[in-house]
Image (tube, rainbow, N blue to C red; front, side, top):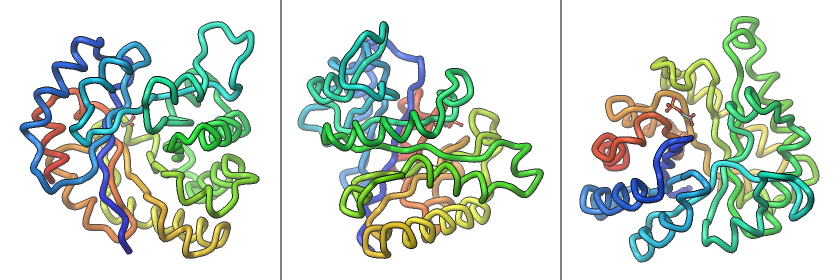
Length: 249
Ligand code: PGA
């Protein structure tokens, strides 16, 4: 299976445009020539600067969110075509912080996935269970519902353009990483679900990322797992040295 390993930094609400330029310039010499595909999800206001700074480096720039409509009276929102125009290649959708603090639902996220695909952006769909759901043993049920609802009406050829990020909510920003065994078990569950829904050929092409307290010292043991193709990295992506170490795992 030839899935390219990819490491995606999620800067959340950190870094100005100037800081983004500085980070990208400093990152480039630190990353080994043969390494994972490197992606950075940056704040809206840093997109233009980051796209310009990353030009010719192979580093891909993306956004952290977008709206589910292409235009309209939605004060403060940004659409897929606006992102496309700014030169980004991907967008994070349904991050647990969006679900938790901004009440995003699976059906809203589903419409965003459709808009992103129409605009030729790669959606990185984030899913994952909360701590209480895992305690009750409901983690797979929760993932299944998120996948069913967020990927409704998606065709197999479109599905192969989607990246899924499994991020257990209890592992995000807490320093608690899922053990490689737990992460692999959940990724395998996701891949099997995708295989049943879209066929094994499309499912085999889809990249599945793990996210939640990924650090330089745990990336290697995660990346050797069969169904883990990369990582979505929050806190450790803010520091150029630690992010480079993760990329060069
Ligand atoms: P973390 O965040 O690496 O700081 O846990 C991951 C994420 O929110 O995508």
